Length: 75
Image (cartoon, rainbow, N blue to C red; front, side):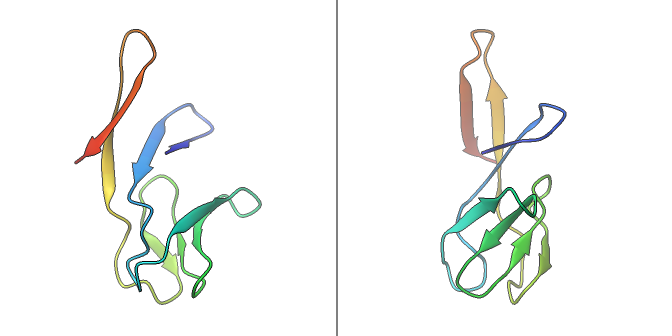
């Protein structure tokens, strides 16, 4: 789950599409990154931008309730 500068929330499966390693957010690059083989993904769309990952990250649906509760479900 990532909160963009404009407050928008984006959620993605944390599994790299290359070899199923766990990805993480790199604040210094403002990208989602896979430490296994260096793939980088866009934080707004999950699109693969570099590295060997063949597909974007799977995006998930984010909803915020009136109470401010955050719900993430598979899209």
